[in-house]
Figure 1 (cartoon, one colour):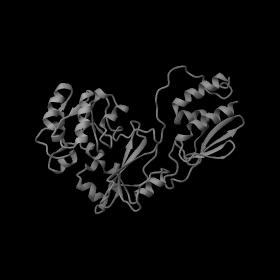
Figure 2 (tube, helix red, strand yellow):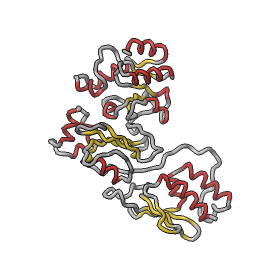
Figure 3 (cartoon, rainbow, N blue to C red):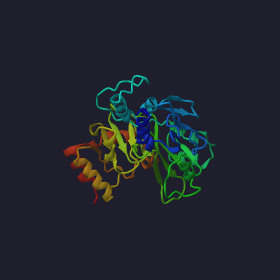
Figure 4 (cartoon, helix red, strand yellow):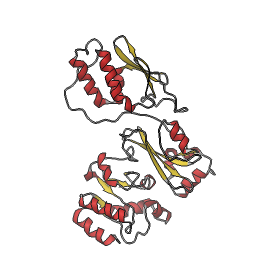
Length: 337
């Protein structure tokens, strides 16, 4: 019975395992989610689940981990682990294999752990005259972030080597790669910013469908007010800021409490879509930044290029963050449509 239970729960967790395949009866192969597997070849899969007597075990031929299926599931999907413990306990199959007796309490939400590194050259490692480094310098991005930004000479090839299917990507498309990490510093997504003319200036790719698409969660203090912007590059100039990589800033409530955030929309009072989303956010009682008339630039990076310092922009934002009735009054004066 224990083999049947192990197999059943392995199949349930399999959608979270990259390149998951069944080699033969009771032998399964996939990329190791614990170490990220090979960084040189994203097509290699060196993690194995195999049967030994009446139980399943896990082994990775890349990092050398060898453990029980219970411990593997504990790392990859703690929520499913609760069900697994309960199922084995119900069948009287915990004692002989040192599986802990389940705790009968509500499981907490927790994402699988993927500690993958970006297999690309960081911007700080590139020659000074390299066009990607020149681009980053032209945007006046602080040099302290150069080690956290990367260059992909062929973005489509890079995505494919990670084992991710993404339609619409062109060949020989060099891009600036901006990694997204969760609060535990696990890689969950990345954005490719075009370094030349392109119909798709930004392409955001999630490693797994259930990952959040928020940049900067690894850098913020959630006990303080968090500023939520659209663009990751803009967020690098503010204190305690994240970016949603699109204009749906309200989606931040999937990972942060509404009362702890302030939404910083682009300064586009004639953009009907932005105006509509700002009005909706105000009606839903979000803290919202309403740009004062003195600001003519569209976003924070444009303000930086126009001569504003990060401290000056931070002060403007701090002094123009409103909620409820005051936000509605300032919004009426701001919009132009």
